[in-house]
Image (cartoon, rainbow, N blue to C red):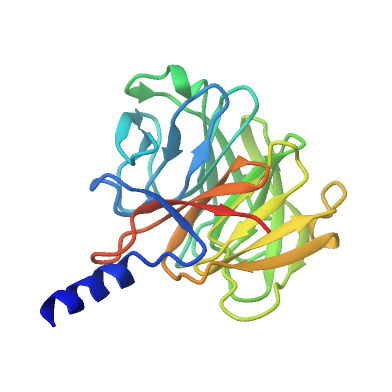
Length: 265
């Protein structure tokens, strides 16, 4: 009886729904808040959010830390997401704001991340919200047409802003407000496919796939919710290829801190 109970516990703990478990992350990575593939690098790249080091970690497909890079001129106020460009540069979104008190937000650019050994000095893009907008929590972004598309995190009344990919100080441009259907719709990470045709927005138990959009009107196309049948604190998403994404979640007791793949329907 005890043996059968043990098997049941193991089975339940390994049930990942529609997600495919690739690896458990290194024990050092309890709060992985992003995942990104970078042009020219064989590693996956991740960070941790507020209260953790201002470091970028390059991991392999077994979840092992291969590179540990200190971004020497940065501060991890609340690092929430990663994106990259076709030149192998990595961008860190320091724009989390759970208390909604920040007036200034930062994106750090680390050039040629694959060639960095253990320390980097980032270039800095600062931005503030347009006049009349209250402070908001942002946790997701991607780069398209030389602009960062940055999503607020709320159950409703979300906004999408853009910031130019130019070093210096900027005022964000308000693009649109939006409200995804259903409940528990906080966006924790975002990514765009290499061919630019598909956008994914991550949530703890599902993602939204955006297709058939034109230019920056990304919510005017087709929006499909795809449920994982697995709930955890999922914080990172990026494209493995045009139809498959990598996803990471944070550790919660014995669960989480894993790397998964998910096939888009």
